[in-house]
Image 1 (cartoon, rainbow, N blue to C red):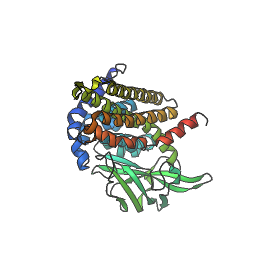
Image 2 (image 1 turned 90 degrees about the vertical axis):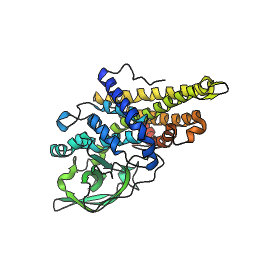
Image 3 (image 1 turned 135 degrees about the vertical axis):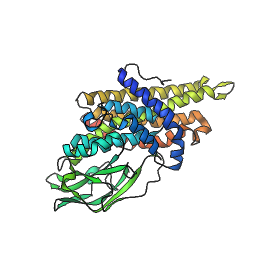
Image 4 (image 1 turned 120 degrees about the horizontal axis):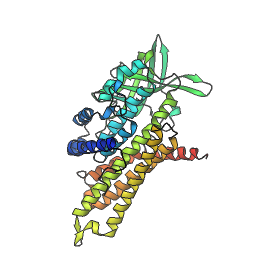
Length: 385
């Protein structure tokens, strides 16, 4: 059972993992079932993560960050996802989709305005990419933005946008068609502050899982924001977001590994306690071998995201490795959730048990931030196919 932190990690990473693990077990786990049942956003947990500095992990201290790196964020996500994927995705989206685009592509003025509160975790940002007719095929974006008197006028809609409707959401950055080029649509990204007239956040979705994560559809009806709210170079919005997605896939892989490992840990504990046919069920090969395969999946997926993160931090190409990590880890999470539920038997079908929540939550890992099919496409392209 892999409840110990990998020994090969440097001490600062090991200490971070241990700190987040304690927080997950002592603060997150006790309230997870209630927030899942009530579909309520865990503001008190988010405040606790903010106090630990988790939202600022990969950002420089000059912007209020912790001066760490992206791998540190991944380690935190893994520990959180062992007990609650909704909490983990709130952190992942808040950092990689909300704050990271500002850090990567924002002007110095935009960084100074937005990053300190995002890194502190007192505010959240969302990223509006997906539309009803533009999911994996983001080039079909229909939301438009035109310049008028020094302002962008935005019209359109987005769907499935995380962290877009909380009480602490500061803005959503949206992709929009800002013109036409010889190669097709010119897509740019624009920061839209919460509360801007014409910017409407729809009621929350009734989801299968991630019930404590904040997810909404958005609409924009002649929404006006200053021309200076353009994020990054005009026409580079789609390309820039592909970079953000590549990084985000490593973070999602880490989250998925946490879910996969959480299923292993819970299954091991249960198999040692549950009695059947004169012994604990872990003494039967059918159960022992099932859990052994679960552990193997989690460890392989962990190595995949470690490798992708190492390449990213070294400044080397990592697109293929990020896709492999996301594919491997999301498969592991879904497979382990299914097998853990089987180990628990009828109890695994009860929402009071964490494996039941993992079973519902893990499916979206094969869809969000690039479907399984998209990852296979990216891997195939990297092989010249």
